[in-house]
Length: 349
Image (cartoon, rainbow, N blue to C red; front, side, top):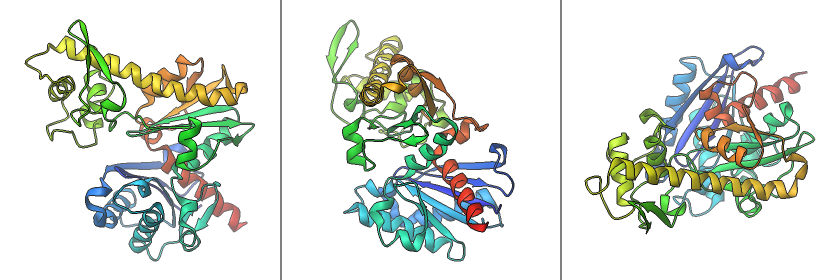
């Protein structure tokens, strides 16, 4: 098997996994996750891709690569078609001499040249990579991948992906895509009011604080895990996070005690669990066979996914294959690399 690179190019992060030559064991998989806000500086995407590839492969280029993405939804692009084309062309321009592939919404791996002919078939495909790979190990489960921005809930029955649809809009309607995550979620999208200082208080619908502040305060995330920009440009520290959270109720860290702010954080975290649990219940209502079974948990917000799974009677379990925490946080890129390796091995027979 040749060394391969799996890409997951999002709107706020670029993630990649390098599967070294061999039998594809998890210990031979190297990963990188790099913050990159494509809406701010999309022209720098090729430079980011080259930097990540060099970090993973050094002077040795991979034998092939495969692309998944969600960046096409960014409003820097007028249409998703434009976004997909931009991402694919950017990768192709970086590695013109390396065979490139993309994963489509049906879970098929095709050369980039074909993908560019029908861009919408390759939009928002990162969850397809994860689900296809997980389905080989867990033929009956709910895949729960909680990222920094969104949560994917993918029903797998009899080894098959059984989603209500494969586009973002279809998955939002079916409860399989929930726009809440561990880092970037605007808190006004999670709660309309919070208990503070002994009373209920409405929240400001402003970009004062994000979910990363909540989970930093609660110890679910370390400062180095807070990889997105902070709303106020200050450091990702517990102290500054408390200041940001206080502004959610029109106050500041001098006006509220740390205990008051931490209590708000716990309340908001519980509401995020409820949001994800609500999506799970909607999915499970269509697949009662999955009730009481397992939820395969991945993503930087594993703690949210596990809590939501327990709230609906599912047993949280890791994705297996010896995946480390770092690999679980970038599961789509790891899965994409393994799917490409399998595709190339089959094609060589």
